[in-house]
Image 1 (tube, helix red, strand yellow):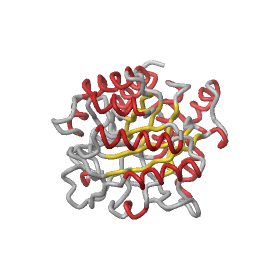
Image 2 (tube, helix red, strand yellow; image 1 turned 90 degrees about the horizontal axis):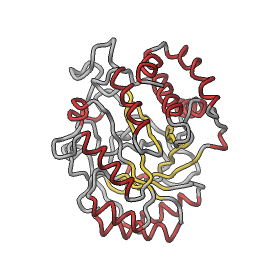
Image 3 (cartoon, one colour; image 1 turned 60 degrees about the horizontal axis):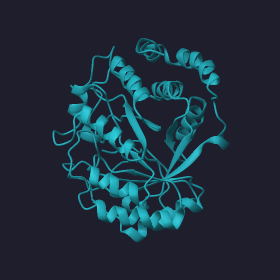
Length: 332
């Protein structure tokens, strides 16, 4: 499938296109059943961040955010809870917290692996080769580093100048892969200024990158969105070209990721008791996702955020432990 074919499917009427995608997905073994969907636990261990990304809830210049940093014993307790709840792996996420350096995270990784033996993903932004190597040697299995957008101008708009360029980030992905990490990547659907052609290029790039699993999330609009971006922001492309952030578009993108990378792990919506979220998960399973996220961050830390980072309204799952709510993997 070339870029023009991807573009044609993206721009086609959503419901008609989804019907066209169904037989294509069937050829690569989808939809899957609920029993085949993997469950991963997510723990946000810190929301401190030294960077000022434009659309991030935990950016250094978001003064309304109450900051926290979990202690190592509490992190390990959450990892043990993840194993007890049947999670097949754990994701430890944070902003680019300068106090979460090579030494402390190495200690946490070793402790977590010895207590649970679960596969461990780290999502901590752009880190030095020294840090990445130390964490890999300590036992970390995967590293998540989203691309966000392959449009160089849009990418530069999203990220401050003290972060790497798009090319630099792709090089970092390859370097981490050479260290032995499995790599996770992601893009956002509906970023202000994202056009259909840009999104088609994003998907084509993800097919070529040495990435083993993907998260595709929709970008929230409104006054509580990161950066307060509204639907009438001057950053938005013209209506004929701006990618919407609706569920049908996200379903199309999930399906295309599955077709482009049939054997990859594709992360879907986080677990929620909200009916709308449950419907989206059911639809997502039919269109390519094969992993869900259970957020195990203690609830008292969630109170530090005005809204979840992915912008969704969420409800805790009953009787599933403290702090089980929706979340997006996307970080720095």
